[in-house]
Length: 551
Ligand code: HEM
Image (tube, rainbow, N blue to C red; front, side):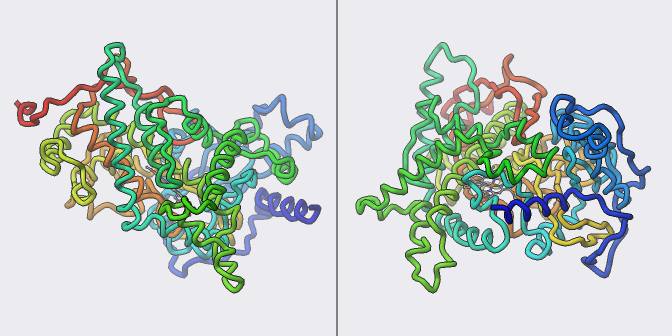
């Protein structure tokens, strides 16, 4: 226990150390370094203003020690000649220009260019949105220098989930999760999605029949759909949360990606206490929610030992088939152990739930605001599946305009506003020195609104992603699902689930803005990119013959 404490203590402190005398032991990534891509700027100075943490950290250190500790790390980017906002004691550069962290990134990009240095509380973080650098960080050098995300260590029971795991463990787990999301497997799961998209329509119909319901809270429809699809595909349980809005799966899954703020602030200001917090069993994922999911998954897992349920072809069974103890002694390092199986299943549930539900809500909102786009999409839908015909997998995959609409919506509202990678060694990328253990943060939201990469970035223009125009998009300028070996594992699955629900609803209804629709949206400052208040729209039943509607 002590050794673990020491190890973590040292590595974490190292992570926060400023560069002494600007001297670095640099492993140069490439012999052909190019020039920097951001405007030259005055180096920033540390703000000497009063701490925002008046009530918290000060009692732990002496007055002068406190001041030194509060901005001890803040010289790193000055020494590297990297511009960025001025940090304030303890607080760093958090919310320097905007309370919403991804809007803040956007402001920083406008001020400092495509590379800047920021401080998340006391922790230095290099923001990179230069496409050439991203190619190196996310793809070319993923396995050598940039394999892992930042690990907060406070992961509770989910320490071995694929999104958290590191290096060899991550590679082994990822290799076991990937086969559950091949095109063939997704095609097999399509009938489950169809079943739930049908239930979604029935539920919508009953809402529309209720004269008291004038306005629809969009996420109340798409959230349960996405959760029901996930649960059914992952462990063959039909939750039916679409008909039970207060289902605990939905309430817990909605909470899980919102870190408890006091704990987040404390670990950020005092990384030295992280091992202790870890020992105390504290977790950034709300414990009540992870415990809830784990208990459910454990119960379902236990039931699998009954013979009647052994032949289910869901994702959980896929994992069980590759369980360590079934592979034999010589291959025991290749499979997943019991704990790992439970962690992957729990994590997949919420990795897929909110991202997909939010995307569907933004699609409805954006289409309601752009009726001409909605009409063109409905024309494509009616041509592909005439007379509101059943939505088939192959037809759905061939719909080009549908793809453009979804892609453009994910450009404007990428649920994951940032990606992250940790540097394993000090190295130079495109002339910029990235020190060992530095967090490299990719501000996807800001990247998607870079006016040089995306003319009229705030405009919703699906034609950017038409077959002809798509060719000229730099793949490193568009990252809603990340890119490279550590990209989103469920990307194709998510796109099928989203497109199916959208087509089914648009076969039958138009989305309309109404008095209750907030325009422009106020964005939520925490978690995924999302609205602060739920999106509300009106739905209008389409007349059966779409030709009538055109006239
Ligand atoms: C619109 C829906 C979704 C979006 C926008 C999205 C986006 C992302 C992003 C940006 C990442 C990080 C990629 C990186 O760091 O390069 C990620 C990781 C991940 N996503 Fe998704 N995701 C979505 C849906 C799903 C679904 C449905 C699943 C599972 C069924 C899923 C499973 C995962 C997993 C397991 C990872 C971690 C991969 C790893 O660390 O190896 N996602 N996702």
